[in-house]
Image (cartoon, rainbow, N blue to C red):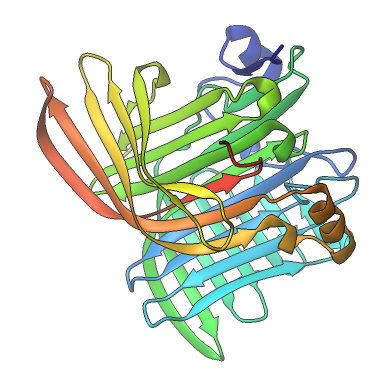
Length: 357
């Protein structure tokens, strides 16, 4: 018999989690602890005006193998139109990690990620790049219900997600090989945490976000592990400026098309994924259309040598894929398309489990 997996969305859930509909700065603060099997990260990405794509992630410990003690690390990925590609990860000792519980104020060595749901500052330095980011929210912080998915018949495990900046304006300073440049762009920031290894809860997911004209969209399709019956969880947001237009997942139909196999990780992915929202009054269709895969990672390659060997022996073949392509928003009236907006976008597939046959 399958175990329960559910979105925490009842009044009792809000009370238990000490949450209200209005999001507070403490929700973007530290939510995990050094003891036990838990994880947490703060994520940022930006599409810059010079055509560059930037992703920065601050981790308190490994999301795939969360164990006792902090294991802080910073990931910086930069793809520039001149062909420059940087994909660096910096690990630092546990005593160089700290974070506030009242707001985002994360420190890993001399690096930091801090903000208050309105304004943020990031400093991240690796071997190949030194980045400073300053950004401000355009679309206010949002979450799907409580942002928590419970796993287990007693809600014993959970995965949590807070899009603290669905859309923002960013100012980025890059220093590469002694050369400093400044460029603006639009950005996104979210915050994730949980109390169990993600690979024990989730089989795979797609996640994407994009700015399309004045519209902001956030979309995800998460598939739980086999013991939870591969139950799907759909996440959907359409906003315009600071107004939320649609986010009720009960009106969303999700579809995957054009199956392909990634040559590096051997994982399946789809070249077209769509989210169709129709509540009888508002009708939106969001399509992610693949152009290229810009990052292909086997998760075992991120592990220390001994853990990598053990994972390979156990048959673990988790993978992370990041895609680049076009996102299209279609707005309907009486089932006829009245407006179409398009833009470039980045989205991802994370695959923890064995490939489904």
